[in-house]
Length: 348
Image (cartoon, rainbow, N blue to C red):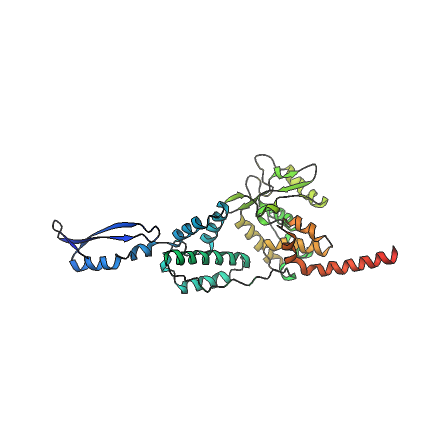
């Protein structure tokens, strides 16, 4: 490991080659300005293995390599990247500097976030673990995510996470701004996903058939395709709901095309703020916007609606998905069916 004297400047310098930890290519390193030969040799000994290069490789760089390797759909890649940028604080940290302690502290803080569904938390954890495993398997980086478990998910919808109609009416009476009141009312009585409702424009409605075509959703990146192919659907609105929607549509035009908002869509941050304020003011139990969707399905099933019809209305990919979440509610409708059949047998 030689060091060289710069006779013009009176200092020492070193030059050597290192291996790029991501590409495997060899590249030359030249470092000048050492006061002594010993300092120059110490620098070379420390960095010849590429240690400084390795420490500068960020989680984001490995994440990019991981997605290149897995080749997911562009939409999936964009969504997961945005998700990690929002919920994983070490995206731009050197991946070799992320310790097990840092990961455990992040994991615990993620678990305490009440505004995130367990499924969302588990997706974040799953992607983070996959990226670290890829970094370990292909580039020999440590894997500080090993051992992180998924959060417990309760797929069943219980009374604690849905609003009855009286509870919803109490809540909606405390929403101060009309645009947001309209949005919450429509979501509760249609069971649409928040992005599906927020994406609605006047062109999605058929004025003659009193129906709405759900064909896209609004995400943090703007208008996007739907979650699944089965989510693309046309819903005929109940007469009472159409009477609510019709004057809103009549007040819209090409310059104000969004059903909720007019010139532009309602921002999610403001929707969340308005919902939280109305929950606090009304005193109803706190649920999430997605749980309004569960409220709709619960109301429909308890009222005796066919589970297949509910599944199609919600835009689920299969009836099995609907049954997995709402099967426990069918006991009530089963009892109602027994009573109905008994009445039919008695009275013909």
